[in-house]
Each structure stands twice: as C-alpha cells, then as structure tokens.
Image 1 (tube, helix red, strand yellow):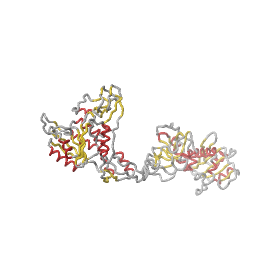
Image 2 (cartoon, helix red, strand yellow; image 1 turned 120 degrees about the vertical axis):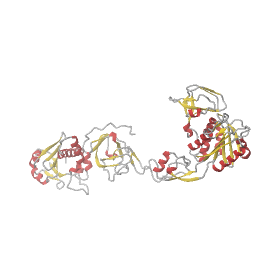
Image 3 (spheres, one colour; image 1 turned 180 degrees about the horizontal axis):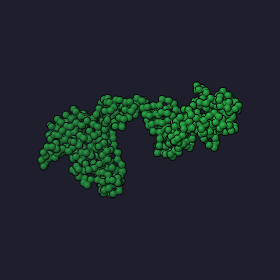
Length: 576
C-alpha cells in the first residue's frame, strides 16, 4: 500500500493540526472541526494516511466515505488509512523544532514532523514494517515497537562539522683495563641480593619487583568510551550526513546506562563510560551537531571508533610488569588500576659510604685549616644512593689510620650490602684502604683506561663488595656513574643497566690521543649541541654542577670540531 501523501492529525484541547507530507512539501494546517478535516482531505486521490490521536477513527471513517480503512482491523487496500499513533514518539524532536521555530504550537510541530517521518519511511519502502504490530506492543498504536525507526526517518536539521582525523676481575699483568672489559668483568663477579619482602603497592616506589605481579582483573574491565560524544550501533550508519535520534539519559564514568540502545538510535556518552548494550561505536562530540532530539555527523565512521575494548590494556591473570622492574610512579598507577594491593619486592639495597684521609674535614660547618678540605664525596655519594632508590648508610669519615679504617669497614660489612669508599684506594704510603683490602680481604686494584678516574679498587670485605673510588670528587662521580650505577642496579635485583645516550653536534674542539676513554662534563646548548666545561681539570668540582651530563669520547683517537657528532649521556640516564 502506497500513498501520494501522508496526513497526520494531532488534536489538542482547542484545535487540531493536520500535518501533510508529499514529495514536494511538508505543511501543518489548523483544523478546528471534523468537517474541516474532511474538507482538507476531500481532494485526496490514491489516498492518505490519517493518524488520529484524540479523534475517534470511526467518526472520520464515516465522514471520509467508504474508501477508508481503519487499521489494524481492516486490511483491504483503501485510499485513506486511519490509525492511532503515540505523540510521545517524537516528543524530543517536537521540543527541538519548537525551540528553533519560536511561536510554533507543539501540536503543529508534531503533526508536521510525524507526517514527514512516515512519508520518508514510505519512500524507503519501510512503512509496511510499521503496519506489522510488534509482539507485546499495543496493537492499536501504529508504529509501536518501531519508535526509533520513526525518529530515524527525520532528516538532519543542522549541517555537521567535517569529520577530523585528529581524534585520533682482570687477568694479572694487565697494565690498563679498557672500560668495556672492566664492566664485563664486574658484571660477571656480582649477583643480586635475593632477600624479598612484601610491600604495599602505594609505598613501593623505587622498589624492585622480586616476582611478576598478576592482574586481578582486566583493564579496562569493560568496553568503554575513549571520548566524550555519542554512542550508537555502527550497523545503523553509512556514508554522508547521518542523523540518529537521541535517547533520554546518558552513560558516564561510574554512572552506567542500564537500558539498551536500539539500532538506529544514539545516546550521550562520556569518556570512560561503559558502552551500553547496543553501542559499539562512538563519534567525538566535536564532530557532531545536535538539537537535543537527534545527533548528526558525517559518515562513514569506522566501526568501533573511539572505544576501548575490555582488557585491551592488560588482561586479567597476566603479568603487567616483569621481575626485576624498578617501580616508578606510573607503575604504581598501573598496579593499583589492576587491583594489585601488594607486591613482592627485593629488600632495598643498603649502600655504605665511607670517606678517608687526614686532609678531610667531615662537616662543612667545622673549621678547615689551609691544608685541609671539607668532605665533598660523602654527601655526594650518599645522595646518589638515595636517588637510585637504595638505603644510604653513612659510615662517616676516618683518618689515615689502618685500625680505624678496619673498624669502620667491619661496621659497614655488618650493616650494608655494598660499601663505597673514597680516597686511599691507590698504592701510596697512606693508602690504607687498598692495603687493608689486600691483606685482609680479596682485592683487585684496576688501572682503568679512563679519564678522569684510573684507580678503582674492587674488593670483598667479610663477604661485602667494596668499591674503592678515587678521592677526587670529579673522578669519584664519573667512576660511580660508569661502574657503580650498573653494579648496584644488578645487586638490587633490577639487572645490569646501561646509560642511554644520543648523538649531538659538538660545540667544542678537542684532539684526543688513543689509549683512554674520556668523559667530559657537558651540557646542551639551546640549539641542541654539546658544550663542555672550560677546564678538564679533575679538581674543578664546579664543572660537575655546571654540567647536565657527560660527553663520552671513544678509546681511540678522535679529532672533534664544532659540528662533529659526539655521544652525550645526560645525568638523567644515570638516574640523577
């Protein structure tokens, strides 16, 4: 059954409005009486559909003549089909129309819109579906159970914005040990501290995982929206401008929408909200227009756009992090999001720091004679240990006295996992540290092909590793960064580490002879080039503070000129 025009009668308390839709136009005409309705419809040929609300279909049947049928009782073809509708079907669209057309009576707007929707359905060949009552629906109301189809049939009233894509140990006899060989030997000689403890996740920053944690649930636990926008079933959309009627309510994070979104409808959805039943795609709010009744946007939209699948980040029962990982603030967020309240971690590495030397004054608040210097190494090394996530153990300062040093080493071995000493590590008359380590411990004193640095004493004292660092603060820091940093990381359970460097243009000139690897105090210029401290003197402590990293020059000869690529190692790559 097809019709040349669709007429929709909406009765209100004072008058009725007849909406008439044809291929050429859509109008709404006031009609105060049944006779007036009959007059308006009198010239109909090949019929109309008249959908009465308050008016009795039988009364109109009598007035319009025998070629009229009342749905659903009469099924024979007729020029005029009379049926009831539910005006609430287009309530949202009616409100939107009246808001954009001030002075329009709601009944007039509803009559116009309903006629337009039904005529559009007829043009699509979908009107017959509305004439088949849905099981469980009220059979006396045309379109019951097909409300979304009726709403979807209305054209867009706004032009959507264009869719954007922005949603989117050394063998004896070796005189000089190359840096890489020294590192390899050191790596093979040490092992992790294996004692583990359980720690609350919120307090585990800087700790090293002793075993891989397991996700208690997936993240995200349910499919959800990645943006603020509108959710719908992708199958109901296509190319070009799309208009989807809006359902009342919304889905928000922590406030799920309990109902189902019918195909062809849309619902307001906010970032993080669980996708309601029936929704598999979301369009970004900025790519839509809406009048409150419907949402419009340009198609096609990719299936599943702007949504997150359940477990797409981490699946339940899987390990989000591996054993040996040092926990950072983002890791605590991840573990907490997965419901992991406690983690098994390695006990924090205890790092003892000892300064030696008659020339050292331990506290800068004390008086220093001209032949004395204040202790710079101990506060530096203690802070390094803390910055690396370890427990710094201050072993203080001792004079060049063998018995005093022995006692302090005993103290360190009892309370620390590893000891860093500065000074007394060479072979001079007052180098009691190396002498003690050789006579009562197991000592390997290396001459590293390194500048600054060179002497590095590695020993075991009562089972505790000892790093005998140079007394010069510049050399002490460089040796700490190059050797102690990866070694302590291995002992902590986090594994052997290597600093991350990158190539940058040099902003300096230097001709380097072969034989030793060199580390120059450096920092980056505003244009990204590496400039070096004005002096290479290892006594210039200010250069350590001036710098933000080191330039590493290779073991062989090199001639550096401005613009020559050099390897820059930022302090941050060493964890400071």
